[in-house]
Structures are given as C-alpha cells and as structure tokens.
Image 1 (cartoon, helix red, strand yellow):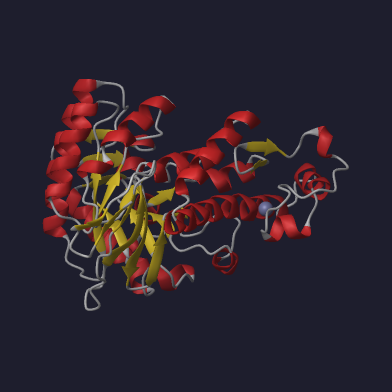
Image 2 (cartoon, helix red, strand yellow):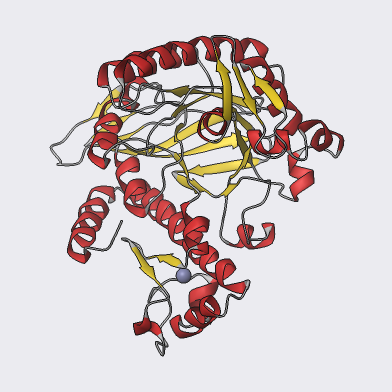
Length: 401
Ligand SMILES: [Zn+2]
C-alpha cells in the first residue's frame, strides 16, 4: 500500500493488487473554488469541489436542466435526491428567455429556485448539433435560431458574456464538437477549440465563476493527448472531456478515457460531458473521472424506460401489468418506496403527467446513488471489489445498456 503526505512524498509501501494512494490537498478557505482530493484508489478518486454555492462531493452525477428546469422534477425533489449540481444550457437560455433578462432577475440560481451549484455549458455542442449553421470560421459560429429563424453569432467572448449573465458556478469554454470519426476535421476543430479556450480565458471576468477547459480530438489518441496537454497547460480550475458519446463505439470512448485523464492535473476536477449510463459512470470513475452529466435519466423516463443498476427496463411491457414489486427491489427512491411496477405501467398507459416525474425521480436516484456508492467505496478502499462485482453483474444480467 502506498501513502503520500500532503506534498505527495512516499511514506509507506506494500504489494496489493489495487494500490491505495491517499493525497490530501488543502482546501484554500479564501478561494471561491478549490478541489480537495480526499482518497484515490487506482485511478478512481473521491474529492470535494468547493464552490460559492456549496461543496460538490465527487464523483457525482449532475441532472440536466436544459431550459433552467430538470424536466418534470421540482428543485425540492432534486434536493431530496441529493443532487449536488444541476446543468443549464447557454444556447437555449440565450435564445429564450434571454441571458440579459435572467441577469435582471437575479441570475440563474434565483430564476430557477436552485441555491446549490449550477453548471452552464457554453452552447458549443448545441450550436453545432441543433443549429442551422450559416458559417463557421476561426472567429465563431453564425447560426439561425430554431425558434424564430433569427440570425445569431457565437464567439468565445460572446459565450463567456452570456454565461456571466446567467451566473452559474461552473461555466465552460466555447468549443467545437465535430463528428468524432474524421481525422482532418477533428484536427482543425481541435486547433480552433484551443484558440477559443485561450480567448474564453481572456474574456472571463467573474471570480465567483470557475471556467473549465474542454479537451476535444474525436476518437484519435494522438489528437486527444495533444488536446489534453494544451488545455491542461492553460491552468483552468477544472478540465472537461468533450466530444464523447456522440456516435463513436463504446470501446473507442473507453480507449480515450484510458489515456486522457493522466494528462489532466490530478488536483483539479475532471468532467466527462454528456455521458451517463450506469456502466459509463462506473467505467468513467475507474479511469479518474469526477463529474458526469447526461439527459438520459429524464429523457428515458419520458420514453417509458427505467434504469436498473445495470441497464434498463421498459415499464410498458405486459409482464408488469399486475407486478406489485417496485421498479428496482432494494431501491430507496421515493418512486420505489411508494409505487408498484403495475401502478407505474398504468400511469404510462394512461399518459398521466405523474409517470415521467416518478420515472425521472427513480432514474436520477439510480445514477446519483451509484456515483455516491462509488465515492464511498473509494474512501473505504473497496473500489476494486465494487468495480469487479459490478462488471460481473452487468455482464451476467445482459440488460440493455
Ligand atoms: Zn427507485
């Protein structure tokens, strides 16, 4: 077993399969943001990211509230799920109701009634995936609004200005997220993303917001390493890995996650953007990821699907018609402790509004609780066993992931 003191010097060694390395970075009390890394097990880490709206215990999963609302779930319900961080979307909120209006109304926390940490993405992903794009050049992107057809331009400076108006605790650099499979395009997009990251950093003025950099480079290992080194070199308070789970194979995503985190500072949080099935979270944590977000829990809920710990079930299946069991046997969420599969199936069949709400509460609980269990196992030194046991169960179950 290896232990390091706060300066990282080696003080004890033995031969264990899973190496325990404990590092403690002091939380600088005067800084609005700091990352306290409390335990490391192999590559997996447990930490605390301190923000002006409270601490975020990592690893954790963050629900997505695209339009400043997690679809079908109230902030009070989110708090009961032990949600530590909620995402909101720069692109959508800029177009409607407008970032200036949200600033006038006291910022996002006040506007959406959520007083814990919020993260806004930069709008890059949405501009490229949803926008009717008129022009991309090194300065920025000009696109047509999906709401009224009006023309808008996002530059790195504009993306930062909007995010400063919105007022989230964590804001993201403007980046380009292309199809991950084309080398030349990914290389050009990566260079542009690097240039835009420098401009975002220069444009950022609010000290009560932490600006994170984003690593790009598609499925190409050499590009990813180059991007990780460059972004890490800009010394942001946190680093994100973007452009994954966007059409590449699962094995390709894991290969990138095998190599990128080691090039990102260990004393800063690492955020894997837009990735969040149960297995993705387990595999991501095993590779040194601290933060996850994904629309999946609430999107699946609206499509009548519930997460198990290893996969998912479709609640409309006839076999649940008179099933009095909860969605997941030992799940402690509000939905599973109060309602049967038969009732949930009935709500879905009857198109009741309560159906996606109850399924969302369960799905979010599964991911938030899973991340917390991983955190506890890292702290107690049992992450290796947890990971092995989880993988065995996942492959035995054969559930759709
Ligand atoms: Zn449940």
